Image (tube, rainbow, N blue to C red; front, side, top):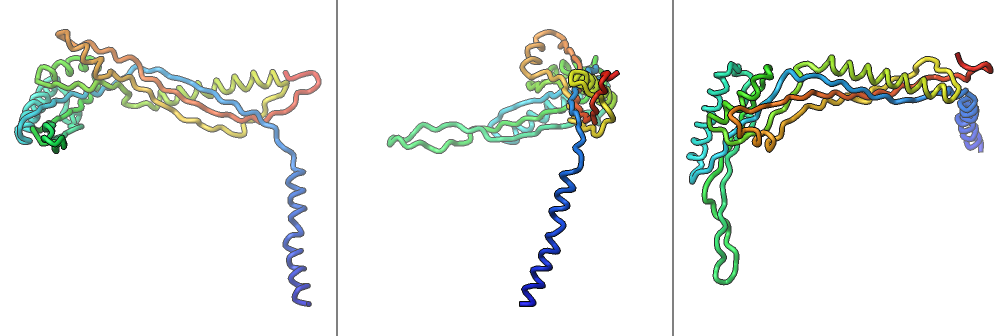
Length: 251
């Protein structure tokens, strides 16, 4: 009986402070806050481009298909180098070899036959990074003249996007502050200090010329390429502590 009494006393000692703690937490004043989100965009002219040129060949043997592709790929590389593009900016981004199957006629009983290999298809795609925008069109033309029969498009970007990111974030912050001021006026409250600032993320949108669009432009002697602009979007959430306005209103 003594043991049971001691155990009960210990349990009461452990659980005793909990109601007081709960009451204390409930008695703490709730700090009123106002949360707003702002977004901002920055548009910048690109200063780099990536051209993807390639060759696709088919032959009865795997070796013959690869030889055709390699010969043309070397010609593409030589043509691009003549434009002054350094070797470090030229990279093989795709190299494939796969069998080509032919469908056999079904047997007399109607049972389908297994497809057989009738040849091989090889492809090689070269990515060329350019930092001179006036070289994009000539690079496409040089590659096509050298035998490229694939054009996977052109993408544009920024060598350093930190300034554009900072500008987009600054615009997002300004938009959030303006929104907070408008809401505070409408709610008849005063904005105090910022208690939290959370970046919602920054997204960089790079213009891309699709393969279909580029192929439609190669009918001319020279390929015109319009870079457009790189877009950088940012969002930001601000939380303000707010106070009620006095009787005469907030100034």
